[in-house]
Image (cartoon, rainbow, N blue to C red; front, top):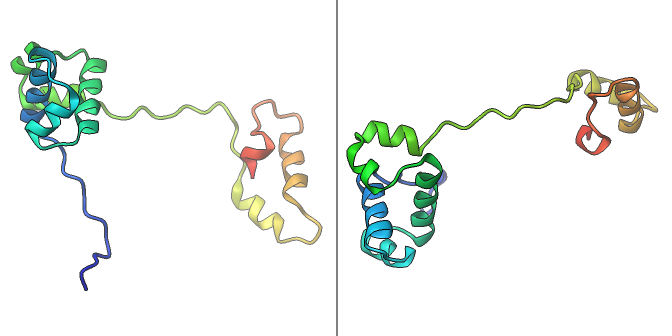
Length: 126
């Protein structure tokens, strides 16, 4: 009865809290724990936002001068797509071939990798 079937979402820290985190840590010199207690967030969250701001090149003064939207765009950059140089096999065909008697993953990988310098290694193929 008291258990939820779906997990509760984590609330995102507001831009005001990020600004205050930067001010308390960088200007006031408080530790992550002290900043966390003052803002009622975890010290790991404080560290995360300090690191995100450093990577984005945002300090206290800049954070104060930016709008919420500009600060959010700098701190929460979109994830970069991973580039893969491997040539992916057709896993649908692999699945169908595995249904045939005597066909193994090792046999299919050897066929796939033969003459293919961009092929996955066996452990990644499996």
